[in-house]
Image 1 (spheres, rainbow, N blue to C red):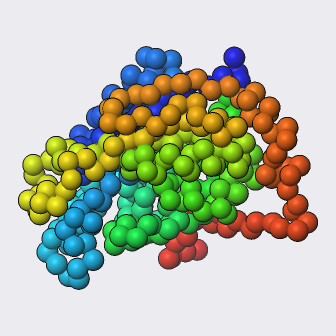
Image 2: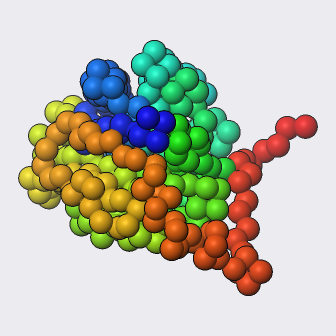
Image 3: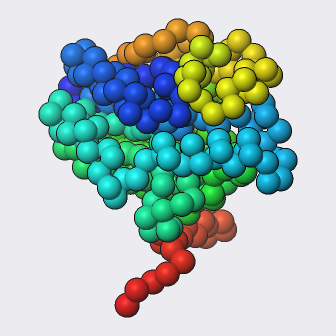
Length: 315
């Protein structure tokens, strides 16, 4: 049974930019997954406290406007400082229920001064320990107006039963070298997190699975007009241009042969549960292994800097 892993994909919406209320939804999902005997639960990119949808809806690139300043400040105030223990309840649930967790957060780290924010993918093991927090290397397009670029410290993999698990945020999954950095450390279960929508997950999930001969679990959030709290700053301006559905889900799983195990699930909130078998990885690695027998490190080799970046070093 060590080769089998029961996974819950938590396709849920945030209580947008309300970290306390969103944490409660996350905690409820963890408990539900534990009741179903799941061993890993995955949440979407930036779920805690939500994706910065306002940037595309309110003229996010306009310089020095009250709308952008006030929404950004509201976002920072609802972001997560790991060093202050703001994930302690989530870690305790992981320990209590022996369930591993991948959680997409907006991180406000003290090692970068505590004012800039990062789209981070946090891995908490089944003992309740935070083992990595991967800050998105390159925010995408308008995300750069609110998120800072991360570093390579979180390009790490982790043991989970027979599997070796690693993960990337959203369009990082299109970056060949970060993928390779995880493959080279033995990854065979790849976690790809997204803010939502099958237009992101339907192609890349199967592609990474076939390229790596690994299982790929893509997890997205949901977001609709009704998920914006009424006390959101400048809500009238956001809703003026917002479609009814901003993120339709699309969570899915592809097997090591690149075929669907769970096809993208749309517009359905809740847990999507499936059990995968590590032996399928070994079967597909027989004919292709991108960092093993089908690699040529004497010709091409990747160098990875995993040092956590900081502006000040105190000696």
